[in-house]
Length: 159
Image 1 (cartoon, rainbow, N blue to C red):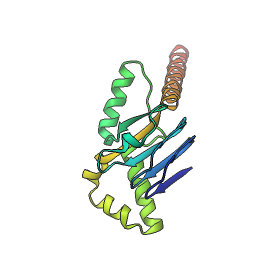
Image 2: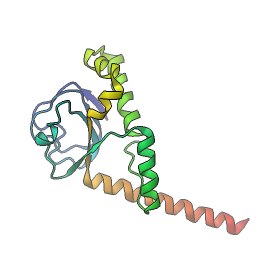
Image 3: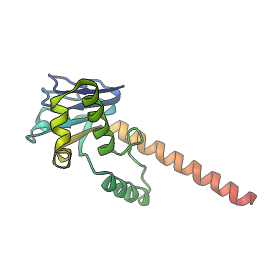
Image 4: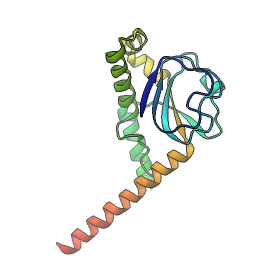
């Protein structure tokens, strides 16, 4: 499931186990309490979101530009660690597409104003990434990469 909201009260994304949530405005307290899966992107205009987020099971990360995220993924791969993409698309691309879709379906002036200054605004979004989900994505990618290497080795033996 994917949701875009323009603000949220207390306990948003509490016990979230999957999907993607985008919050275009302020949140209440205790955001992400018990969040074990999925990803949330929160617009943090004034830099105070971390004080309202329950950090016991999640980390807060910047939303990287596509090229910066690809570079980080190459560095992780070189270190033997897995890729950390949530749904395949780079974070900045996914986030922008969800906001554009929200604008198209709702006519939201909030979405329009954020998109109008995207190059500046993107840096004010925070990615809320559950620690266990991050670990699971990394392990999945590592298993897929190992399987691909084994398949390629078998193909070389046959050839």
